[in-house]
Image (tube, rainbow, N blue to C red; front, side, top):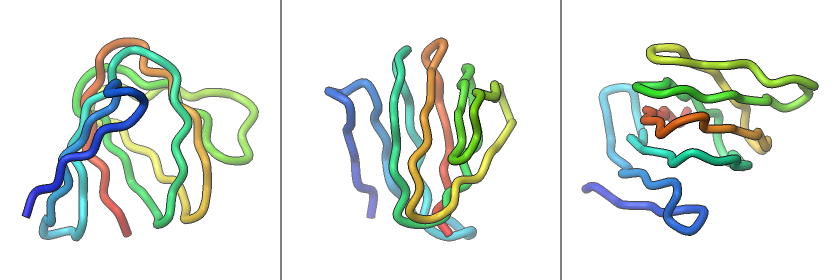
Length: 93
């Protein structure tokens, strides 16, 4: 069953689903800066747009564009700057 989620006053929206790889969300982010927390390991793939991401323990942001991915481990926080409207796919492990 699909489940909709909305965060940051509606600036980030996602739909949860079950895939062959396990639980996932497909979502979109409006331009802006966000901080996310994880409860499981996450693998995020940029589908379109552009994200600058500061992973836990890192001092600088790294830019991810279409088809690029990054991982964040369980019980972590990470910062994201969406430089434009961005779509993503996130797998939860």
